[in-house]
Image (cartoon, rainbow, N blue to C red):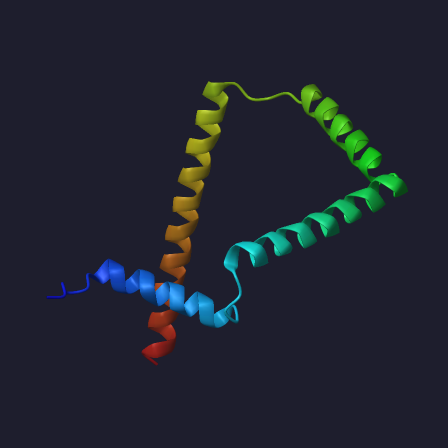
Amino acid sequence: MRRPARVNDRRIKFRAAAWKASNGGKNFVNNNWIHILVWAVVIGGLFGLLWWQGQIQRLAVYVAQTREELRKCAWPTWEELKGSTALIIVMILMLGAYVYLIDRVLAGLFFHI
């Protein structure tokens, strides 16, 4: 007597059949390695071209200069940061209330005329 197929068994069989149909019946592992190899060659070639043009060196200089400038910045203390955050939250709530109020007033004027 045959046991009833479980949901997981059916899903696995369906996925395998769907993959085989979409892949033209080819072996998944071999096809996947070919794709990986092609992309590795393309990315490696692009990296080599950028290196040859000096773009990688320019990027390294840019990152170094950016880090140097960020060290010069005056960063806020924890208390200043909490105060600024609270102020921004309060101002956003006030702006939202103002826009809501103006919207209600204008809606009342235009739709009750």
